[in-house]
Length: 414
Image 1 (cartoon, rainbow, N blue to C red):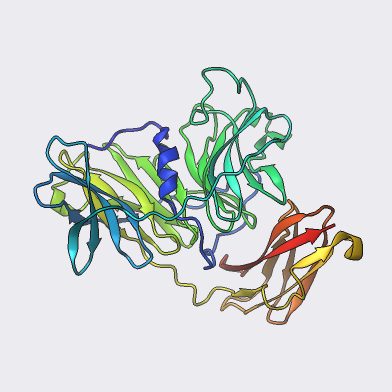
Image 2: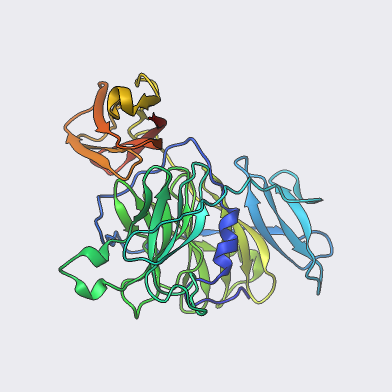
């Protein structure tokens, strides 16, 4: 049986390393805008995806899949009876499982050192970073230097850090004067993708179990619809596909969710003889695709599993080009006063307007406006106040909630 959890466990920190960090494909389409507190979206669909049983190496009795490439090649570990020392395997659809000397892993982005945190927080714990120097984790507010403090426990608020914007708190419920009882609630960031979108867990109140969430600049918090609030490790890839754990009446089951996709249970294969108490755990997913790998058990095993989550269909999404129309990626405070013009163009989606356009300037500020139609080159202007490197991201979302995004790096000199 897979280990049972009430919420998440410290192993989440190790599993974050399994998530690949960089991609140049646009994220999926989010639903309608949220706010400072998450919107509840819809109930979980109750549908599921049955795993493909990948088996074990000859003579072994258990296995787990820990990495999947963009081409669909799966790697993992296989164990002999009574052994804690694994053999490594590679699995392909045509060749099956073969032993290999090692499991390839993408380079893990370094976690930035953060020297200052916003008031009233006392301490910051970084749990994940992307290749652009952006990071997420937990801001601690009380008793942060005591021996019993742990960032894996209840308490603290999620943040997003970037070199241009510094450390910004994302969970702003404590600023809501209409809900003073929410002041000391908790949220943790556990994963950040190449677009700076953050996934983690979020407590509705201090008596509840955590719920998974996805945060983006366009829609703020989106709670992932789950049938039970017991969630474990929460991971997001560059397609905004979120993996989490939920507990049903009998066992802990992995789930996958995207803003364009209902919550899908990642079910065990029927070949492992599952009845009550069958468990699954999602350990990794493709960097930009939808394939998920992990393990499943039914009193025996666990066994390596592959889930084929439906791919994203972006054919009708807005497409944004913010990379070819701006004159320069470098500007000088002395010569321009920090004034930067971002020009961009987007294709009209199949949905009618209005369209939301948002430019995240990378320094903690953004510009948001709506337009009845798009299709011509347009621009927005922003003034930077200090030197630095900023990731400027332009989002365009149609009336059906589907979006596209494009980015460029801007360097501001003296």
